[in-house]
Length: 288
Image 1 (cartoon, rainbow, N blue to C red):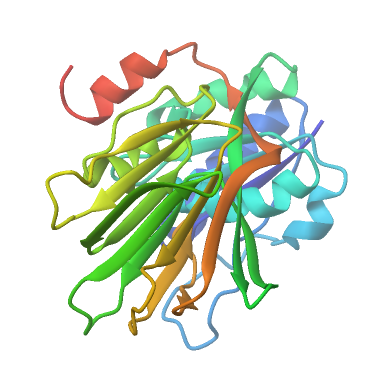
Image 2: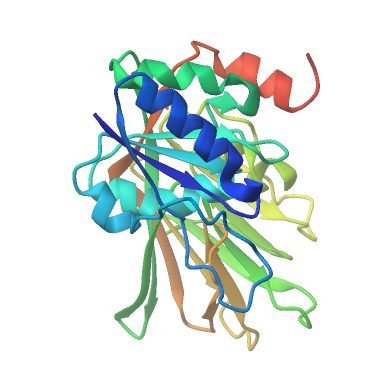
């Protein structure tokens, strides 16, 4: 089996964790390739080890069986775009602060040897198709594993938002914005905004207002087959910014519709340890 190793060089300094994993996997009989999840700015002060051969992610994934990411959840979210397009399962090694999506911690690299023998399970996670429609045309489209976040700009005070489910109004409120999350994303920004924690293998859409200026603006958990729409309230002259899985913001103006619906595509996460979601969340949130 070929396994692609994807280290975030800002988290995995000197690619030490990736190189350790490479030795473990190759000793277990696997073929490996190391690829960065993004292009490194030539002007960056980041120093990469001279003796490491770096491949091109999309090329190496063509015949890969598993993608292993080293970093935090952001690294996994970024790399998932290429892996999902090819149906390749992802395993995360946490080098960040929390890392809810990561299966392993840095001290558990020896468990990677199980990948070479195919001794692992797969957990499928629901995703969202997120789009923006403007005057009947689709001007933005992206998939989300975690969430779609609509927020105010740096100088705006509050946003007046209308939220619908299958074109029926769910809520109208003023606030700093809104999170539309998958169960996987329920432990990210949605949780910080007061949304519920949902088992990641569940199939729901979570709506969580951000700093709402209203007593009736509460989080909602909808069925997976609902189509969620969000727009600035009619008559609003403000603009908002849409970010999908923490990516680059897209400007949303009056009259635009943000639409979120369940995607046919899923993300496959590798399971090695047998730890339950409850064990993981208690450990990560410091309650154990």
